[in-house]
Image (cartoon, rainbow, N blue to C red; front, side):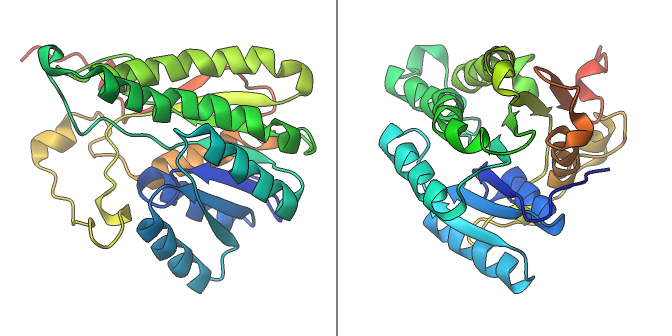
Length: 259
């Protein structure tokens, strides 16, 4: 399905663990040179060592995407090394693990989540532009969430940031159309990342029958499910697709539940 990644440069934020790491490995196995960007030095070093042992072409850059100066430095470094960029995946995210009642929500915590999940992708795209423009048929992919469309209690920051990223996706798609840069999104549902975490956080997943039956496909998602779709959306095979969001959740958001 995915063609044309050999020797092309792909940059993935939040790429050292979880869904991000799954995408890094998948793009690299297709022949891409993948730049892993993450604010976790430990996770980045682990990912780099493991993937290098597999003889995949990867490099690691430390960066907190909530900080504009670090993003500027990141793309200066990338520009000196690679000159151009074929794919930018804005995957770095934070905030879902800390539900907080509205009465206890701190403005500073809300701002931190939006800085990573929403402002970060905007600024990464901004500073990646000169490199993307030098590639043939470049693409930007934003990783949002089904939380942009549905919620559990007390997930204000995460839901708002991912909803904003959905809107930013179509805004960027229209704004960058003249530059021939396509921009799309993937909205994952329940994706099990336990085996894809760094060693100090890794765990073996245990899903109950009820967990699986929430999904019409009969299982919880895996990073590979997102990675395979990312390969397609960022390839020239998807050249007529821009400004769109693909929900990948095993059918969970379309299943009506009355009990």
